[in-house]
Structures are given as C-alpha cells and as structure tokens.
Length: 172
Image 1 (spheres, rainbow, N blue to C red):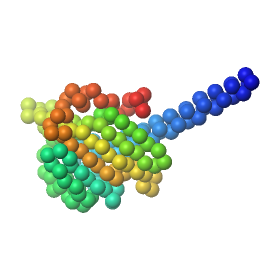
Image 2: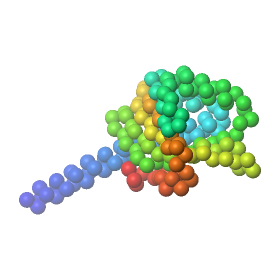
Image 3: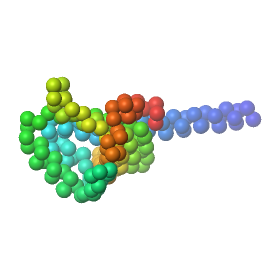
Image 4: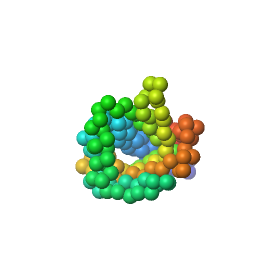
C-alpha cells in the first residue's frame, strides 16, 4: 500500500512538472517571438517585423471610446504610413494579468505602456489594457485577435505597475 501511494505521488509530481515546464516553454517562445519583436518593431519603426507578428486572419478590435473592428490590411496600413516618418521616437512595453497556453493556442491579457519621445523633455506615456489570442502557424506564434482599450482612460501607471513582468512566470 505504501509503495502504491509513493508511486502515485511521484506520478502526480512528474506529470505536473511536465505541464508547468511546457507552459514556461510556450511563454518563453511567445516572449521572444511576439513581445520582444513587438517592442523592437515599435522602437525601430520596422513595419515588416511588425506585420510578420500578425496572422493573415488577424482581427483587430479597439474598445472603449474608439469602438472599431478591422482586418489585418486595414489595421496595419495605419502603421505603415505613420512609421514612414523615421524621426518618430517611441517605445512600448507590456505587463501581464493572465497568460494561458495549450496546444498551439494562447490567450494573454495585460496592460501596455506606450511612450512617445522617450528620455526627453517631451516624453508622454499612454496606458491601456490588451487581450490577444495567439496561435502557432508553421511553428511560429502569431497574433490572431488583438483587442485593446484605455477603459475610458482608467488604465494608468499604477495599473501597469501592479501587473506582472513578462518573464515573471510564477503567476502562471
């Protein structure tokens, strides 16, 4: 009986560790394939990199006061024309409330901080909430659904700072 109980406990420990490590592997892949490149594309105004992060089936939703829903070409066209001004200085960063991944699908919710003219007298930061649905396409994570909102300007630096860092996997 003791031997059976020991085997059962070991089975639970090993199977739960496998699930956790797989989840961490997904989160690391998502961080490097999506979030790091998202930030890099904003800072370098690299439209091609930004476009490559999105599925061809992208659905983009702006909530709150902006209320719009668009397909990939309509949404990304905005960035292409805006980023032609290569004197633009900006950055974006992300913090998370929830990260779920399984079987090549993921849901990620959190806050973003978008800053124009970083490290200057004219620096201005804007905050919002996002929810993205990702899926693996040809072994790469892509943004399938991207929703964001300022929640009627209720998201602020405090909200952002209270969320979890991209590499803080303990929460998930």
